[in-house]
Image 1: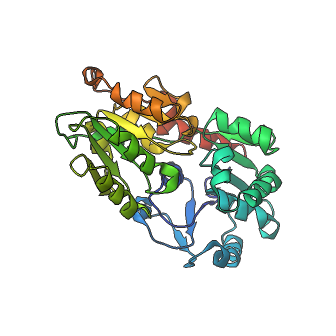
Image 2: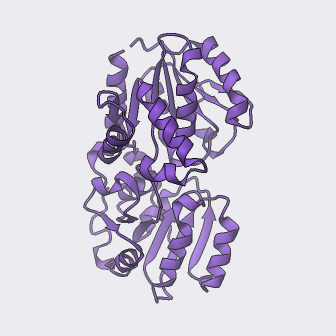
Image 3: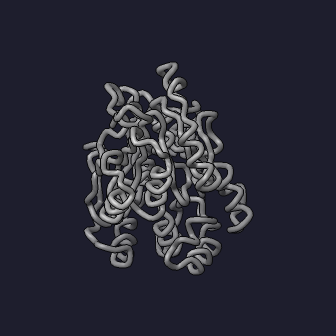
Length: 356
């Protein structure tokens, strides 16, 4: 593919979520290699706006919802005539595929799925409709990008997507950058085990149950630092009071440099009810900090000897209690497998582009 042909990324806004961060990292890496890239957003807001390089055009539709954005989106794509339209987030993927007939001929539509559909769709407000739309539309993508082998198998088995459409692209982690910014480390230390967790404060991320599991630790010296913001912030703060954890739990909100906290902690806790491939856990491993994760946490179980998968509440609590501080940071090194390093993942995308 000619590097002068536009690769157009689509996001609702520059929210601080993992899916948005992944797509922006791909955009940045392609831009640095000389590709013409741009991004359409429904609303030009959010903490990740600063990630976009100055030379990359941002096309702001200035709309508050997907419904309001559809016709302006079609019009803008006709104006720009991109070679590839690249989207992530399930409802955006469905929208792009449903309007494919109205887009210029010859455009390649690449969609990336951020979560395991078998769980995430059941937790959607309209599960039957979304399952129907996934089955009806996803097979018409030029590429369906999955984050793990487990996700690929699900789409082949349950959503009738042919294997030659599906590609596996590990989430990109800039290990050098993260490790540069991770030191000096930060930690909330009371003399016990320092746990850290990160993500949007939503039902999906499971912080409500994480607080309950942490309250079962019976160790008033252990601490839990939670990074992120969201709709459940006040509700979670009340739970901290109910459990009497005011001296042990801190909410730090959205953090531009979470890696100092990841590197400073003894273990990273991933309590999600569903995931695809959680960036926060990958970045924690890059910082040299092992992970305890729920069984529902997507492809994380595929990646490292330093990830403990807990099946249910009791196993998770047991794993938390079993943390051995003597084994923490015996070597100051990344625990992340090489396949997740950004240099490799951007090369995979570049290979796909060269095939067009």
